[in-house]
Amino acid sequence: MQTVTEPLNATTYEAGTRPPVRIVHLGLGAFHRAHQAWYTQRAGDGWGIAAFTGRSPDAAEVLAAQDGLYTLVVRGPDGDSHEVITSVVAAHDGADLAALAALVAQAEVAVVTLTVTEAGYKLRPGNAELDVDDPQVAADIEALRAHYAKDFTVGHALGGKVRSATARLVVGLAARRAADGWPIAVVSCDNLPGNGAAAKASVLGFASAVDPLLAKWIVDNVSFVDSSIDRITPRTTDEDKLAVAEATGYADASPVVTEPFASWVLAGDFPGGRPAWESAGAVFVDDLEAFERRKLWLLNGAHSLMAYAGALRGHGTISAALADPVVSGWVEDFWDAAANHLTDPELDVPGYRAALRDRFANPRIAHYLSQIGMDGTLKLAARAVPVFLAERRAGRDGVAALRPIAAWMDRVTEQVSAGEHVQDPAGPRIAIAAGTDDQTPALLALVDQQLASELDVVAALKALRGTFKN
Image (cartoon, rainbow, N blue to C red):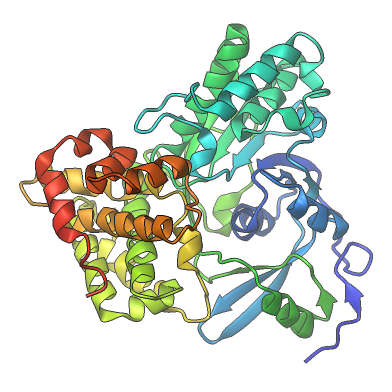
């Protein structure tokens, strides 16, 4: 066991020559640093990342003090391995639009990656269209319009007035257009079906509201790449920081803990070039849809089911929920339903399920149900509703796919009754729906309005509710 002697930064750690910024990332957080930054470092071909935070500057301030360096802890069942990641060469407050605009305008920058969560795209539920009625979207459009004719291309005067991630990206793209307008790729790395299309719809929604000519330039010069991402990355604890210091001899204020498994499947064009991510294990395909469904339904769908059903049964983590034979059985039922519609042999669904069980059961990865359960209205619409609809089209009742939705209803109702905050874009509406005389259709309407009008679906959910603690 080593003794802590020095803080982790470019002075104390010999990081070698840092690569130039060729990628801009929006949504600096643990997952990006365990996934895209790790793949970029492993590619080893000279692509540096400038990363911008989302809601708060805190992560950027901590990482900037370490010159972008941090320790990636790969936590397997039998022990930890440690690697210092050097591919993040700059960390910025997301509100620093002057820095964002200046970077995206540079010809050397060829890729923008996004991890802004499902809610960050600000789309209408069930509709690939910017939700202009959202108060934050309306405020951002007003701010963009007010400054577009002034100094919009360099981001000055906007600062914290623009808060939506894709509205901020529009500022950067406008600056690129005002320079020489080099083509660029935008890669969404969020758990959304058709995440490239979602990013495009959100960006074009903001751009069209500001300047139709800017929107046309984006259509002609910006590619939106779909990607399916996968690597479990729990929150880092103070205990993790102490363990890193003891193991490495460096005091790292911002380590990231992740699992050994990593997957990245991408489909789309990179007109300005890209890192050789395939050398690090990424896979490039012509059609991502089947891989996207496999991940969203089997991994993320099971996560949502365990987040709500597991919490109702008193569990705190994925590994604890899966160890409960009742929850484990529900997961298998959900997987059986989803697997009925994942028939391409290339997907190797049996092998993927077996690997998921091993990953979920890793007791050394404390993946908290409270973290996974955030933004349930958006997640269930992408993870559970499509499986239910596919099962119903096949002539089956789809009850296994309704169970995550029913568990969510019971869980958020429990939270509202206890006076707890429900972390969800529809949080205030959830509180109202949970207080109605007929909760089930009112809550279901927040996930899928059409299903909320179907009496048989509502009846099936009512039959499931209240059964999770048995």
